[in-house]
Length: 44
Image (cartoon, rainbow, N blue to C red; front, top):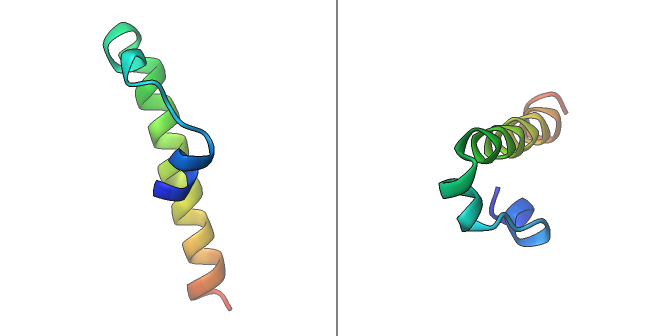
């Protein structure tokens, strides 16, 4: 997730102005990271 946030940073101001959008983006990053881990580490 750290690498995803470095490549596509999220403005911390968004957390205060639109918390649902911020949560959606963070959940998307989390699910993407989990999918990569499962694909590369578990299923290979």
